[in-house]
Amino acid sequence: MATETKKTKETVSPDSALPSHVISRRLGSVDATAALAGEVAALARGGDVIALGGDLGCGKTTFARAFIRALAALHGEGDAGEEVPSPTFTLVQIYDRSPAPVWHFDLYRVEKPEDAYELGIEEAFESAISLVEWPRKLGHLLPAERLDLDLEFSDGAPPGDASGGPRMATLTGYGAWAARLEGLENR
Ligand SMILES: Nc1ncnc2c1ncn2[C@@H]1O[C@H](COP(=O)(O)OP(=O)(O)OP(=O)(O)O)[C@@H](O)[C@H]1O
Ligand SMILES: [Mg+2]
Image (cartoon, rainbow, N blue to C red; front, top):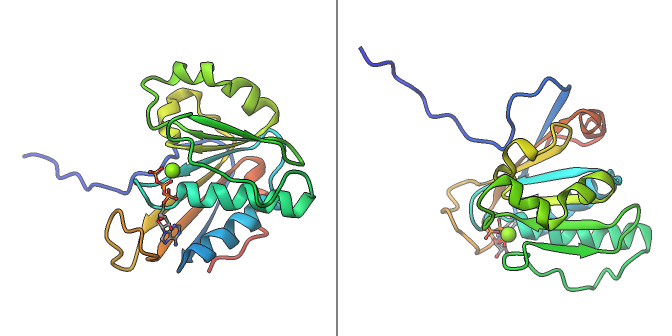
């Protein structure tokens, strides 16, 4: 008899031996996504890897843009009004920020993990703050110690909805990010 397999929600997170902590947030609007990005930006440090997971159009770039702007507002380095384009075609965009530069990656077009070396991931993961859209493209090169932010369309918002519909965010912190997430509330 065939074993029935239940399809579980895919997240970017493989099993990890590191301590972890999970927070979830309902994001009722783009403004709520931006507010969460501000809270996360306040906790970020050089060497951080933030993996932005979720389907096409669920708000990964929206989160990254708000994060990059929030860092400028928080620490005064960089221009909070600076344009933050999606790295869909350039694959990476770099911003001067404090406490560390931000490298914003979109790996949708990357074919194999090793192709990311050409984009400078080693330098970014070492000392910058890396915001990574389509992080599973990195396969084994995705660091175990990181923050995963998984976004989903929620409350009946259809896949691909860009009209302002709600999202659910699940944040999973591994290693140092586990303790840092304990300061954020579930809402
Ligand atoms: N709560 C929300 N949070 C974030 N974006 C939202 C929300 N509600 C609606 N949107 C809209 O959804 C769209 C999200 O687009 P965005 O480019 O951020 O998604 P993405 O996940 O980066 O897409 P891609 O997979 O193409 O990179 C934007 O038009 C944004 O205004
Ligand atoms: Mg995007």
